[in-house]
Length: 234
Length: 336
Image 1 (cartoon, helix red, strand yellow):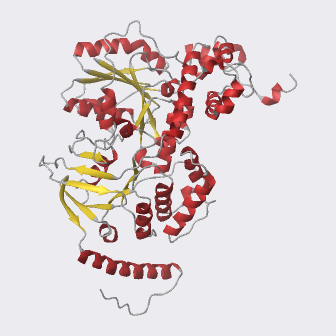
Image 2 (tube, one colour):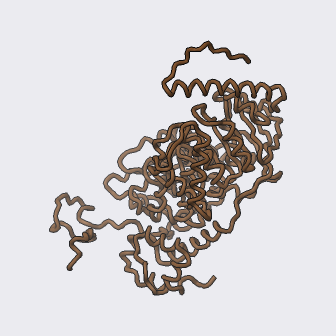
Image 3 (cartoon, chains in turn orange, green):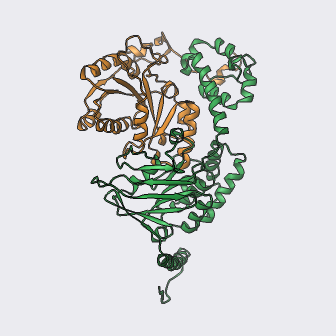
């Protein structure tokens, strides 16, 4: 089974892109499934079900979605094996740009949205920089100039990686995407695999339910801002 | 290439400005360090590494790839395409298309057909240089050959530029800043001169002139179209241009097409506009998702085009008078 991890900021069009790819792969006679990770709620599972794509859903709730993803991805892989899929997509939302969901040896896609502005590729961390393939959505609603500039910035942010435009509504570009997916290695088991980079750290009192504001409540992994006016003279 | 880990940071950043930009996007201050890159990475705190989101060896590999990529961008010449061949596939009912059309550099082909008939699908097939791998089964050859996969998937030196109907500007920049940003990404020798040229050219295409200092988001539909056509003609690398209708509003369509073809572009326009549809050497008729016919513009059609253009000029003149607050009270006596 080929495992494909798909990550991107909320509302960039991950589900649409995966749906278009699933339709294509199903036409070729492949068995395709999706493990959908979301934060609080999702109705995207219905979209997959409508297309006859088996889907399993995980909601991170109060946890960092990235941490929740990596704690469960192995079980998703096992589910995919039990179902006899040829291809399993995991879909997870990167809620902060420091997300780092990609696993070494597993084909990793980052979806970015051309509407987010030409400088966005510079601002996204491991999720974009360490991906194998960057899929750019919504290219049809920005100008040709912005498309070219956006593509240039993606190339600088992840030099050497493949990148392509894909329209999640019309499916334009999906043939290119599917051609890239064919190169993905098979993943038989995830145990022993490593993340390409550590996920955002999250061990502070607020992680475990602290609600009070003030320095006396802040212990553990707490990081403070620097203020220029206070640095002078110190 | 020598091992970049051994190069002093100041030397490295001098030779490759992209490296300095990379550090600044990571939020690392490497401005005037004389340490070798490898030593400098080694002395970074682990906390900094976690913050930037890349391991030391990943950064080293990234910088090497970045330098190669920028060198590659500088070396690769823009694509020259002498001809494009469109080989038919099948329509929505699965009926085979018999069409085989060869379009040469400097030619304009129009695509006509009812809304929803599949004009956009044909543009999409050309855009992705389909190889029988799209639902229509069509194939596109470049200079008589299937395109090199590297060219097909090259992202920022795509062979095909597409000016879509429903585009917006997302950035809030002045026209000059906007075109200059594109020129810098295209690594042209003199970005300022090219920027001025694009803006001047756009102003020649539109009846409503605009200043370089105006924000792109304030441009009218016609001004936007004119700017994008001038940009794609003079600044874009793509030798093939797809246009999804040029609105009537204030763009000199004839000059726009002349501008594109003098740059030896291959131009496809999906249109319902008689002035455009008859200006192409050929037009593709789309019906039920398939290529129903390919018509060469006849001599009589060309004569009719001349008459339609003089009619259009009269309409434009009336429009201009209305804009100036004048009355249109004389008896209009237009004869074809």
